[in-house]
Image 1 (cartoon, rainbow, N blue to C red):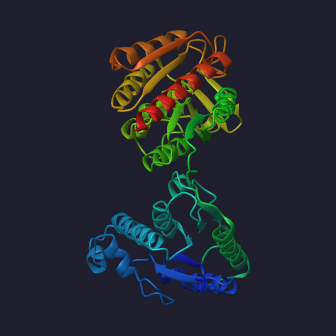
Image 2: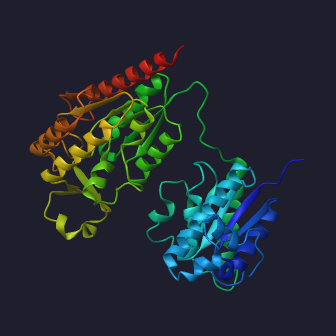
Image 3: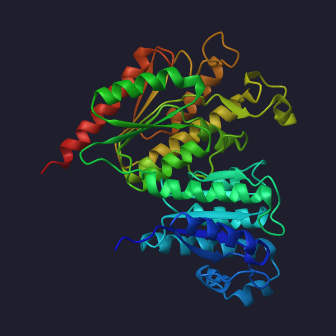
Length: 416
């Protein structure tokens, strides 16, 4: 007998019970079953859950009554999120769920998203939220969570507006569960992770073609904070075999502590080294910070060189002092690597705007960065300076060749 697909529903059932029941009904009409999980710490549930809030709290390491007695709202929601995350992971590994829908306002969205972020890439995740038209970065993190604005509020059950949104959400998750695909490593195929921004896109595109021609699968990650963090997580999970970190822009944002592309999680440029996989690292986009529209740039940065990448994205020059700090941190992180590591520096510019004559070019700042990097870098880590721009074919092919050599050496070492 074929098991029905089961979708987990995360909701605070004291206030969102009717909506959760409506989603369950929609799932059943699509020949799926539902597992309703009550993530709300307060009040009696409006509908009966399959997993109650007491169990959610216990999975987070607390008895619910004791947790509520703390009176610390942020701690309570954090523990409920931790517990729901553990429950979802258990249900996933036991093969008991095929997808998950979360719904809520600010609190329900926070707890649901904390839970969903513990599930693997490719597993169907969908969040219906009243706050989805705002800053959803904390809810998505670096995971593939589908988010939709509820349009109406969750009050009084599934009204004509909410019902269509929830029905579509149910259909979306069922569709993903039935017709979607998980990220898997193909037998015998080695996967390369690569980082890129619009300013290094020509280099990235050329590298992808060259690496694929050499027989590698390539996954490019946009260096937007979430992209690099996702790459680091996939490396930790053993799904990546080599890295061309062409655009480590996020490391600059992390070290300076500013910009919209700061890593979702700390520790950029650490996973490959810890895992011991081959990595070739360059300096794409490391000379500037990214912000939103011009008016979003913090006052302390507004006297710096600025170029508008588009009306919603400002690139702001990094100071020379900050360049030295970033170079030093880069050396420290790469020094911890236990696998093959090389750094390739394009001497004629690190981005479209960072070429000689470009609005963000600062040759002195680049040299300050390089000095800090060299002074702290482990002596056995190779550093090559190439007289080319990062988007020049000469430079790209040097990076690709270096990585392929590392990959082939690694392959030879594994042979009996």
